[in-house]
Length: 107
Length: 411
Ligand code: HEM
Ligand code: FES
Image: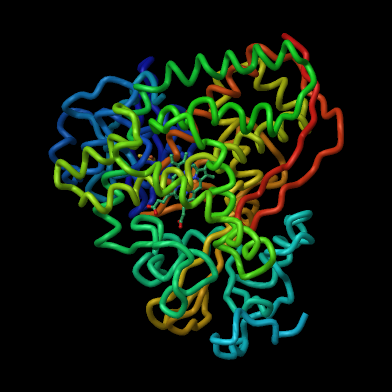
């Protein structure tokens, strides 16, 4: 069971237990992490599950698809080199300890 | 009702499969439209998969099964129609949609075009104008105090922004709502609603066909953007008008019923209006929750491409499966207090916009319209009172009201 940490814009860290196979977005909504809206329910259509992946972890994530890439251009908060959609990050044991920073807004 | 009321003479006699609960319920009857929730409960509790005797189709009404069917588009296909009619057996009433009624890989290509035309980036372009128009509409209605929340707000607001955003001509716009109502009735069975809508459809179809052509779409609008993608080679020149048609079919009456649903919720649940007024940033979620609570798009069908097992029941090839989105959105297995309208609820995961590859491509536009309208109400309106008889509108797919007389007071 990977455990992952969301860091809020004010620096507050929220550590949650995720299940193998669920997405970081699903884990966040299940644990009611404010700051992940996920309006489209994980279908890569809304860009309201935007996160900044902590240094070091980015290269260990699966590559980004074209849908995700295009959507991130429309994300409400600034797009950065480490921007990802959390619904597209599937969790497994090798992502135990993953740290995701939340943007200041999703809309 | 007997099992002999069949689709048409061409349809072979269907016998109910063993072990699947058979129900004598017509989800396309006025009795159902008047009170779907009680019957949704019956459908959900009967089992994960049911057989609807009246139309000879399978039904799923629990969230888990509706979600599963939506997310297995290779087994539960759309290309044989997402209404009762099976395009493998019956000619579609209009040329088939190249997105809604398509499967991968054809769907993937057309979907990418509309997803780009209606992307988050595209929404940023229209947001300011949509916001100003919503505020102006609420000011105008506050001056009147008493009005019909369906005609004067739920219809009037989308009509004041969507046709312009599409780039439509001024003339003929009165055809838009009748055309959409026809499209959504046509997904239903050959009942009176469907037959009458199709009989009266010729002028509306002619208007829409002409309005989908490039020369009739103003530059900069969503319609022109679709045609521009034909220049880029992403779609053919013949496909472009059909994709414009998809937006004209699905982009107006849906938001009318979505905004209508939200108004009906706020009028019935004053504590939720108060909560929204205390924090207008809840507007977007208040709209989303209204979509879950009322499910303006109630149902869609799929057709099985092979024999498949669903929740322990074997379903043969070529069977129609009816998904009750509205029932899934109130399934107590998935939602806490499902029958409560709660503007602070975490709504993510509802299927009011569908799920999977066909999930509403216009959802961002719908949310934008709903959000800015409810935000204007949250800031400007103190109370909403129902001040006359509430009348329901009957449609085979869309759930909404014909009339909602209300009186509002300024904040
Ligand atoms: C509250 C408003 C709306 C609701 C409740 C709604 C609901 C839905 C649902 C349930 C589907 C899934 C159909 C399926 O799985 O077979 C869908 C698809 C679709 N919607 Fe919406 N919709 C809304 C607004 C809009 C708007 C504003 C547009 C266009 C501007 C639009 C265009 C479409 C299109 C083109 C599809 C087909 C997508 C595909 O097959 O890939 N809808 N909608
Ligand atoms: S939840 Fe909508 S894009 Fe991730």
